[in-house]
Length: 137
Image 1 (cartoon, rainbow, N blue to C red):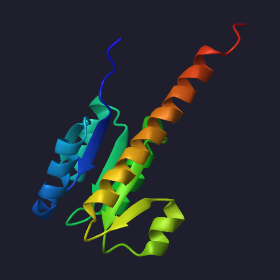
Image 2: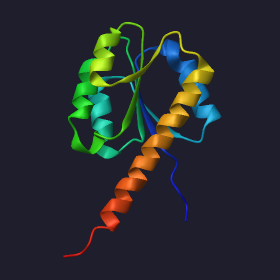
Image 3: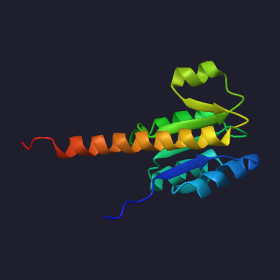
Image 4: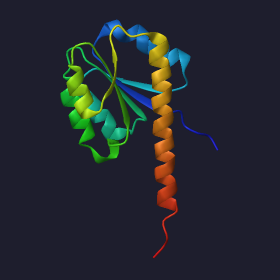
């Protein structure tokens, strides 16, 4: 049975991050989808359910977008990684957002993404097992 590569939706409007995301595409087997603004990201998640969301704050309001994405029931359990140097840490902690500060260390970034995708896949598998193992009434 052929398994589909995990999908990562990157929401980023900063060309300075192109090298970082290019490395992610080259160094991994993930399907990478990029949105350059919030409305585009919301349209994309209507069509696909990513395994990981990566939000980078530049000109987009990452916290507002994060809250909008989290309100969608089907995205509640999708892991999120925020790349930021402007959002106060207290705000990130209050929302439980895992984040990496800029400038980004490539090795740390790749390892963090790998861990989050693995966690996302495991939680999805557990959810599928519990749906299939419910007793029939």
